[in-house]
Length: 99
Image (spheres, rainbow, N blue to C red):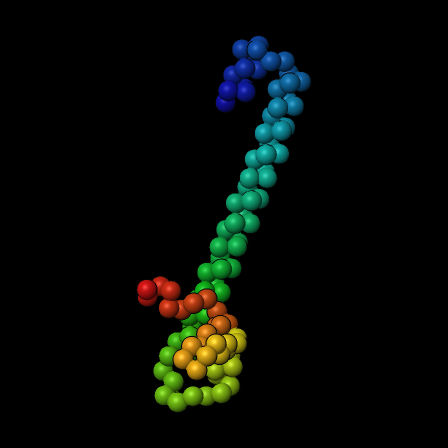
């Protein structure tokens, strides 16, 4: 509103007003686009997280090892020593929320 008030009160001329208003309009559209992109990214991440949780629930009730199912959830297993192994999952660390 300050821009319009400056124009209305004669502090800036019509051409300056139009130029500044145009710049503000472009900036506003860019901000709207960034907000929309961020919202879409958020939805995508939420859907992926939900998908991972649904897949994980399928594996929580496993009573015995099923090689095919294990291949779906385990990316790689690193054996560092006889007492130490590291498992990389095909999804985010499911135990990080429980720590």
